[in-house]
Length: 465
Image (cartoon, rainbow, N blue to C red):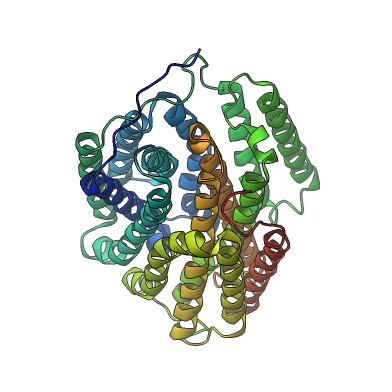
């Protein structure tokens, strides 16, 4: 039996600001690996496959944590869960900072993956304490600040790693996350639970989804290497199908499923998930390929950029992404989600095709990456806002969690496919991929992004369906 709770009291600017500070800090901690991946590969003697794994393990963990965090937030209250979740993130940040080798660093990144669940919890708190009109803009602002934190992390990671050490580039944002979590605990009022407490965690669903994601990453990451071993590749594909089928069967029958797949039957949620997946596959190509292209030796077709230089070159894109959140929130409120997403998809396709056609100068890459980042911010924020405001308040965490899970999976799939394209395009005996491999990656990403227009056409003009 559900319990009736008194309405949560409104929150002031200080509480919203605390959520914003937390979004900035977590965004910074999440982003430090991207510009410094070439440096980490050198210092830890990582292979390209290990580097690709490091770049996505946090996201894969986040895909597992997010639906659990959203469900628990709906069930026990967002503040209570977010504080405990961020405690795990802080431990993970310290493990990453102290890591002497790749296995320990991977462990730290796994723990840091809990931060991905903070966004739907923030949306629960915002919707609980703010009126509908203000909550839409606040969701956009929090999303934008998260991306703004990523901008800061992208810019600072290289100088910190090269000036101090790779250990400090994890430690400094971890300290910021710790302080921000304390602020949220002190300033944010408790929100009442919105769902019954009786049901437990769907452990079978968690195990099967974990197996599905890990096997999927293995198939994507090792597929090119396993072409000569078709039986092994076939075995992995069969295992992937078994995990995926088993997970769907368990979730459909579970009393309290990890991911309520019935939510996908709602047009607003289902379409948002499909769009988010396709868009993030396209975005991840630029996110992965552009830094790699910057790092290609200058005596070939690249620029031989250092980690500090790569972070500086990525700054305009991070700035564009940080502005996209608030712009998207306001745009959805005034124009509707279909207009915002459609404009974002077209902009992203143009940016990706531009990167494929012109990448001989640094400004080509900077401009193309900025266009893709702006478009991604517009689209994903619009999808999250649309989903959060189209379901009942008690389902906010589950619905937005589904969208964020598909964001994470789409990004991870895109990175792995892009890495496989570069691996396949690297001549024997060389460590530098052929230029045509980068072109193929950008063109494929543009094609996937363009497919999403077919879904955009079926969307309603407004936020709700």
